[in-house]
Amino acid sequence: MSKSFFIDTTRCTGCRACQVACKQWHDLPAEETRNRGTFENPPDLSFFTYKLVRMREVETDGKLKWLFFPEQCRHCIEPPCLETADDETAIYKDEKTGAVIFTANTKGLDADEIIESCPYNIPRKAADGTLAKCDMCNDRVTNGLLPACVQTCPTGAMNFGDREQMVALAGQRLARVRQKHEKAQLVDADEVNVIYLLGEAPADYHEFVMASAGSHGVTRQMALRKMVRPFARAFRQLA
Image (cartoon, rainbow, N blue to C red):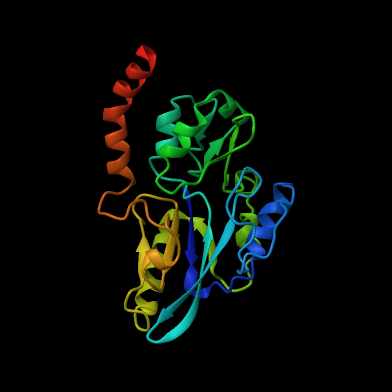
């Protein structure tokens, strides 16, 4: 049975323990940061930063409120990046966990095409074109451990388990949160294995919270790319 995250942003305090735990487990180097007028650092995901807590201060009902969004790969059920790569030595999906894994062989792919295919703007490339992102701590999960980010979360915002269990938990929590936050919603829950619960409008958190600003989800976007890709490749060959 595939695994899923359930991330309840209404319980996130922006402590960034998940962000640090990800760095530590994957032995990723620190990045130079600076004061940009926000506690959010580094400024973006990168080849060395797989998880980043987005922080936004918004006005709700006449009051200022902090919104936190622990951003990471969504591990799509039908991953557009995998379909675009068409090379399972470079990008593959672990059938037991549902984790979408990038390997060193992504160096041979068209990195910009892979990045553009992701509706959540997640993959990042190194100088040599190799791509990287969250791997669901698949080594930990296959050995019966929780992902590092979930293991370290002190508030219960990060949850992980069998998909059916996480979907049920998300639904239960949504019903409770809606009693206080009428805008509360689950994001793209049918299409991804990282299910977010938001208390406010998605646009208040981050530009790429949802697969699309419209009604077209991951599956629709992938179908459109399947139709267009052969023509794009043919055009490049003629150019």
